[in-house]
Length: 480
Image (cartoon, rainbow, N blue to C red; front, side, top):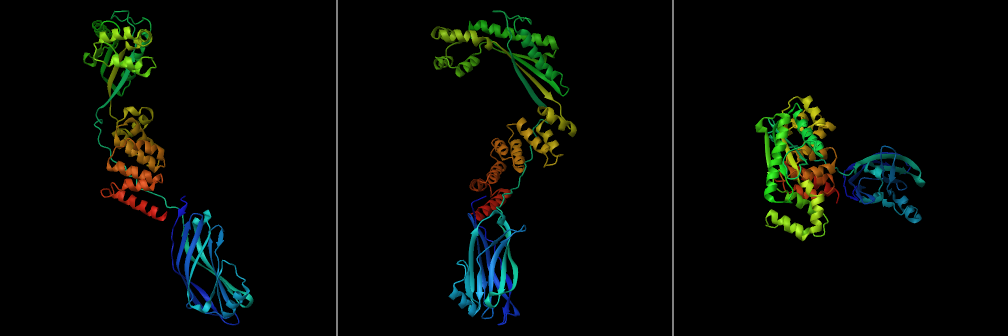
């Protein structure tokens, strides 16, 4: 809660007092208006102000009315404010002579006809947030003997801090074009061992059984999926930089073709599905390793790799200028540069059955398009965890889609998950809707100044932003 809460609640109330004759008997009812009632919390004090109009009040010379504001709630908490003693002539003089009143009480002559401007302050307690301010009246006769007592409510007190409750506006998703064809891709690398300077593939040679099994497993995952159809398989072979460049061209091309023939022999794909590519020497892979290493001459070696020298000249200079590092690379890094990367492109069929979509979003969300996820969301309770999960999954599966991320942020804001919302908003773009979402997030986080600044950017073009800005203004004005 804010330490400063300056909230004025005002009202005009007339409470009925009694005209008292000399014997103390009640004569006629008299209205004593109470106006300009205000309740004000500042830090740890609760302040009240009100006006008492004594112009129509007449009581006997030896009588008095003790008017005391009291704050109370529904469970029995009570807090008293200092009293105003409205005394007839004799009682007024006795009090002055005896000096028998509390220093906080106020003594006035009933016949003065003046308006009393009353203000008082008491320590703040939490229960006072929701309470009632009453005026308690004690009627006293000779020697202050009690005659009667009554109580009148003045105002209902509501000092509960205002809560920022913005409107959460989900944005309709545009068609992604994936409704009829959803393209997906599976990537991998295999490290096939070939005998030195040869292109023939030996499935049982060294670690080849495991590497070939990895390629087959990747293809089988897609091939055996009833919802998927393979459209293209690309194999790209790489050789390491040592040796003559022309020979490495021969090895990269030949070994790639050999691996392609091996896969084709296993599965008998249509020829149009199988594609190959090659790169004679994997200098990029070498550079990545050296860049991350702590080799003594790392920077100089990187400069050499980045130079315009021909591949054979680079390899020769690395070997001559940095023999220790070259020997280390040859033994520990170059084998990994002789690899075959493969890519499996495939398409996933469309889904229209809600029950099927609901199951897939739990088990295989990558099979769903954004449109299909939104189709499921339309059938769910917006307050349910399943509804939130759909929007979060959509943002995770389509991380570059600004609308998916924006909606995930808004859903999480609505459910109070502000940290998650902030993460999704970082990928929501800079549309007016995204600016609005950032503005209301700042408001929900309690940063009203930043919320005001952000919402002001679009308040002229977005009614929802203008409404949220008005709410922020109201909260800020009540908190001053």
